[in-house]
Every structure is written in C-alpha cells, then in structure tokens.
Length: 213
Image 1 (spheres, one colour):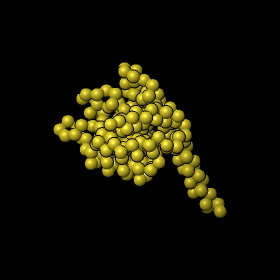
Image 2 (tube, rainbow, N blue to C red; image 1 turned 135 degrees about the vertical axis):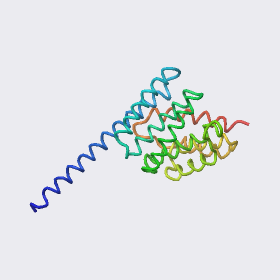
Image 3 (cartoon, rainbow, N blue to C red; image 1 turned 90 degrees about the vertical axis):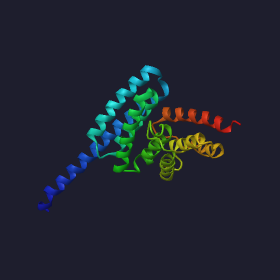
Image 4 (cartoon, one colour; image 1 turned 180 degrees about the vertical axis):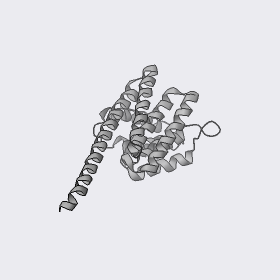
C-alpha cells in the first residue's frame, strides 16, 4: 500500500488541477457569453465595436491559456464573427477569416463541444461572407455545416435559427419557416436570458419575412 501512495497522490493532484482549470475556463466562458450578449443585443455603433474589440482580446488570451479546449476557440470565433458584422468593409473580411480559423481549430479539437456550436457559427460565416474573389463564402459548405449542427443539437435555438435564416436567403420560405418555428420553441438556455431574448426577437423578424407574400 505504501508503494502506491506517491503515484495515487500524484494522480489526485493532477485530477484536482484539471478540475480547477476546467472550472476557471467555464467561469471565463460564462463571462464572455454574458458580455457578448450585451454588446450584440444592447449596443450599437462605436461602443459596440469597442466592446467587441475588448472581448476579442480576452478571447485571444483564453485560447492561449487553454489551446486544447474547443470552448475557448468557439467563443473566440463567435466574437470575431460578430465583429465582422459590426465593422463591415475590408476589416470585416479580415475578422471573418480569423473567425473561420478559430472555429476550424475548435472542430479539430472537439467537434461536439458546446453542442456543435462551431458547426453552427462556421456555417453562418459561409453563407454570410461574400464568395470568391472577395471572400470565402460558399453556400454548399454553409448547408453542410448547418445540417451537421442540427444533427448534434436538433432542438437548439441557434442551430435552427441559422438554418432557417440560410433557407430564407436561398428563397425557401416554407422550409425556412419550419426551422424558425423550431427555433422559436427551443428550450431556454441556462444562464443566458439576454441572448435568448435577443435571438427570439430576430426569429420573430425572420418569421414575418418568411410569411410575407
């Protein structure tokens, strides 16, 4: 028994350290989620861009500290994607490319992390970014990614919202409405009331478009 005491102690310390690191990461991710929701849904103009720039820097520090955790890369990608939409122009394309790199890194680490959120966000990028020669937009890749996200999280608000938005942009109103209604009926996400409220407002707007003649 004594011979086992040192290895068991080392293992206990390693497991404790790993749990502590995961707890720190979870806390940091929750903070990014909350502040991103404020920037995305409650801010406009320069204050929004400034807030997103700060969040981008913090996400970069997080990925540097936790390079083997897909959650950090996913949120870095989400924040950069939002930055791309807020900035516009050439700066937007640079932010979108950086977001794509972050999300691809997340998929390489753990494609199922955060219920397939990397697929959802990457799919959104592929249909929102211009195609060649300006950007890397690709509707076929977008649909592939968004369908994969739905396979992982069929009831998710974001997975259904973005696929519905994609279908609406492609002119498939009836099918888009089906997925938007699913998004509208998605269960609330724990600890994310502002993000859910903001997304449901976006869903309502798209449903009006999908229902118009």
